[in-house]
Amino acid sequence: MATYDLVCEHCGHQFELYLKGFLDDQHTECPQCGSTEVRQKFTSFLRNLGGSCGAPTGSPFG
Image (cartoon, rainbow, N blue to C red; front, side, top):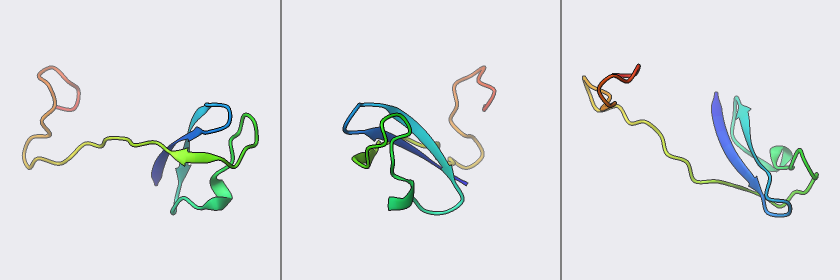
């Protein structure tokens, strides 16, 4: 399942979508104002670094 972080260009509302497939025009409507002027935000992701995930000491991921 993919997570998409989106922002509405019309009202500035930020929201997430969880989809089983790819993001398309059918899913790009702001839930707050109904505008179709929605863009995907740049988001970071965790990268597998082999045996260690590189998480800080004491992190539940390390």
